[in-house]
Length: 144
Image (cartoon, rainbow, N blue to C red):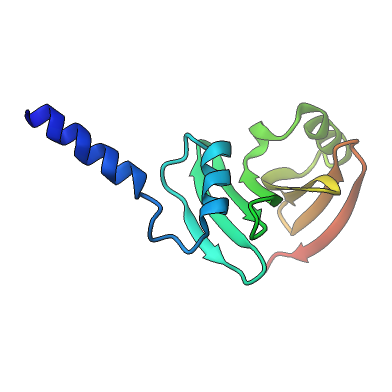
């Protein structure tokens, strides 16, 4: 009997684990279908879209949804190891004297862009690359 009650309690809790989140049912359903393995996400209502934020092994992810549950943008932040090998090789060749600090991947209807933060002793440099390997410097900051 005890096991039966525990099973019922777990079932009820799992059904309402997102009940206090500021999202509508359509968006919540879309999120659960796409990310069934994510048990804990933080939500924000940004007016004309919702944003989910969660951590995964090796990085963080933000997903922006329209009010009708369509994915608008995904933003992932991770370390060098998760960057596609082709882009890694292009970066290492062009910026051999720089260290890759972190990557922010932005995906939307326009495609995928990689914002790669590079570092040396004197500068932080943000390079933007697309999936084809085209790169440009977006920002260059002098370290204090």
